[in-house]
Length: 316
Image (cartoon, rainbow, N blue to C red; front, side, top):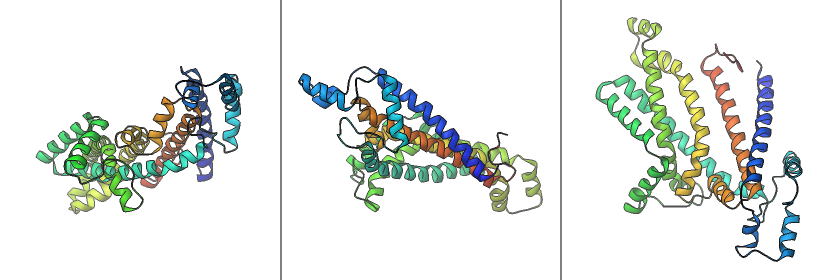
């Protein structure tokens, strides 16, 4: 499959997934108990005139399909709607917070790639006590919930030692990296542990292949064998896990952003759900779905670069 055909096919899949997701999310929010009026007018409510004005402004009394198709038409025109609670455009809300989430996930991905692949290679190539220690650490990392790791990091490095700030995303540049260091570590522990185990298993499997044994018998340098014959062939499952990991980090960022009080998409989504801010919930989820589909497409494209025998868009 050519690259334009692959992109066209992926775009069609993305639009279909977005359509189904938008209908499901809109339906669930529509059926959820409670009303956004309580957050707009306050706990005491408002006068009948205020209730009628807000209801008419946000079309809260319109039938389900009327509201859904009206919202879908706005999405096609690039309009994500207005927040009932924040009284501003959803695009502005997302634009002001997406940078924090992207920076957090990017930093976590770097940590996962370096630590996960590094520990997996160390365990598979060294063996013995090194393998046992790495396997034990990976098991502990997988078994510990993200919020527990986050609280422990705050207690030790932020409150106890005072090395890192406890909340906020910083003012940009190095300050932002410093503020996001602990959240990125908390977000990456479980994924790095999983990637380490996958890397270890893949490398051990490749080391037993006949072509690797032939290279050893020919007396090639061990570093050359690992780089050209072992690691490259082991990159397919490693790349797959990395792609799935990045996708799951998007969901995991919701927990981390709330633990570290970061003003990102995750914390915005949680507050919007609690406040029945329909437009914000729907828009944020659609952004996350787009990111998930795009990441999977990038992973499929990387397969063809790693192994030329894999055709672009092939199901085999």
